[in-house]
Image 1 (cartoon, rainbow, N blue to C red):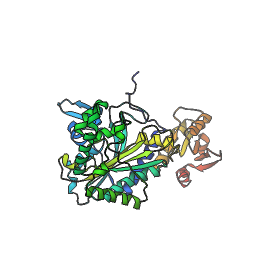
Image 2: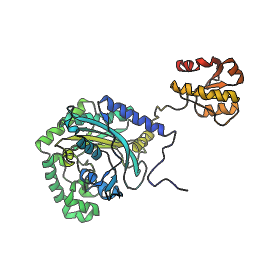
Image 3: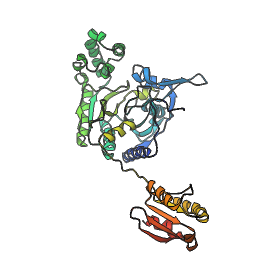
Image 4: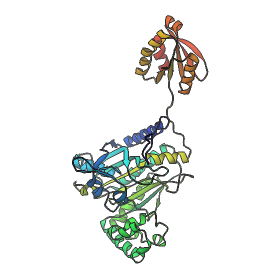
Length: 420
């Protein structure tokens, strides 16, 4: 028997409705903020992620699904969404649009070769937002507001917004030198990845999961102590706007994002729900000034976030949130006898074309078995049609919950159900 690949999942009926509800809620929130949907390819040229995500990241070094096509080109299944969106922004010259910033959202599968665990898969679905073309710190607050609104609309209560500033280029260079001086004397005590990062990107040491409890981590220089005056003013303004929007947050100077393109604002939304797990991050994002330019476009700033729907479902389950998903049918057609069965095919189509969720028996069951099936499918009504009803041109409309039933003219069934 061929089984599903490790780190993937089948999303079956009964569960897929929850996914649809989450995606629809997120899309509706984005539209109220004037964000439009973008769809990009599932695979891209490998160079896009090497340049856009960064050669020193775990994603590029260890986790990408990369292959060579028949033309000898190196392609990669996308491990994240931002690089693809920015590539599309540059390639389609969206920077020339008079309406700036360009506000986009996306949803779709991403791929990372990592150890599968609860809420983490090798194929996972991300929902993300990007706002490209504005240096106004108010857009940072707006983007953060979107994800907080989505989570609250879905019913999450035990969440915490954590923010930090990674500063501008000058701030990062000063902080980089301080980190090297801090870790260098004892770098031999750290894992091989951290040793490689020391000279390439020491900020990434702070994001190490293996050595996070090392004493040097707790005393590492804070980026906030190295912010230039413009960077400090920018970060202060972001905090001001978040307070104006009534969004609670805490500042964590140790927060770094795992991708090289982040500058200035970085943020994560954590779940504090009991039983959610040791890794509490639900959503991550930040500002990526310079990424558009790195991918061949003009110097345009951007900010965005992304969250995994799998992780979000896990958080909803931990908080015991019941999603208001629609289940069941409006009407199940019970047909008895050959003529009624033939007639029910056309009647079923009329119901469906009128927007009524309907189905019928296809197994030649007896009436009792058909009514049981209607009940299993969660039908609100059963419309019973036999030879006698067909002669009288009526159906017996039965309300499944109460058992109450009455005759309704066949040509009035659609309008009757729509009224109800």
